[in-house]
Length: 416
Image 1: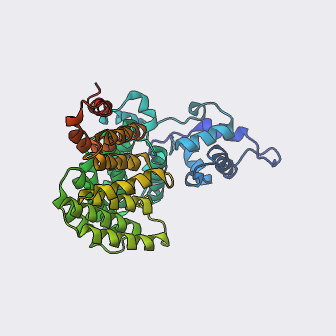
Image 2 (image 1 turned 90 degrees about the horizontal axis):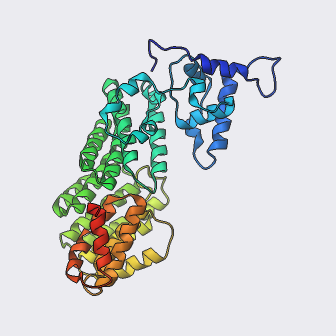
Image 3 (image 1 turned 30 degrees about the horizontal axis):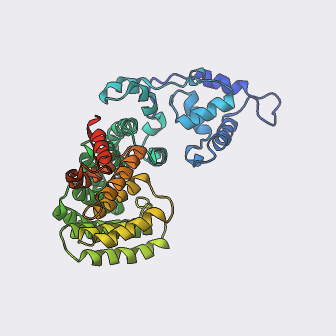
């Protein structure tokens, strides 16, 4: 989006003109196209393990920078520019956060150290629909950087982006940014749930509304599934079942997302003591077979056979068969590929519940492992998952193997 009062960036233009093309052109300076090519090559060199193509540029991008229409490219692009133009800092190229962003700095309470990392790239504030792909790429980058750890600084960064996105969405003539907002809001809700921010439900509700505005059936189903999961986390089985049923009525939902919806239905039924949970799990396994040969799912890539097997174990435990559930979870936690620390932590909490009636010290050991993984992932959701285990173990607090877990849980919640 061009500012009427844009001031040409002479520092950047002069730095480009001082450079010469790699193959020479009779003393002519480096062209904008050649600078763009060099920046793209630098991106590949600086970020070999990441999808740098999302940050590729062309001559028009260089022109916008030199005309002052953009002053603050992405961190990756700034690093590539510094490398190509042989400078040590952004200021030498006239790259600084724009004034309008500084004026908004007080809107969100954040750690001052994290403010720079929270800046929103000027390029994301462009006109619709050109910015839609850029916003989705930025979200992909943030979700990649955020794994496996969540933090308050990430939450502040996402919140700042959402503030800008809301302003753009209100001024957009079409629905394209509603879908973008829905995805960012869903991620914000996930971050909030894992950092202990009480607004996770608010952000998830916003995501559901925006997905509905955009007519995004897969995301509508996914947000309903997430709401069902939150209901389960808060012990509301009836609400969880209602939301799952709604999610399963939607058309054009990818198989893996549908598997998640069926899994939440199974858990809700199991919480209610309804054996139809096994029917829902059978349907989930069948659907997963379709997902194995289907195109990748944007939202449910984490939903694999191990994930579904863990849900099956949880349902068995809830329906009164902790022995079989424990056997399944023990196998999952000792055999197989890598799993996110959040899922693994929750599985340890569930396994601890399985051992609670017969082996309280063993149950506490799994509770401790869950809390260790909660610290690794920065996940309050894993801490919360150990609460039933804590309540069940308090009467065994005199046991040597139980007290350390109870103390660790207290520290995780109160800090002392």
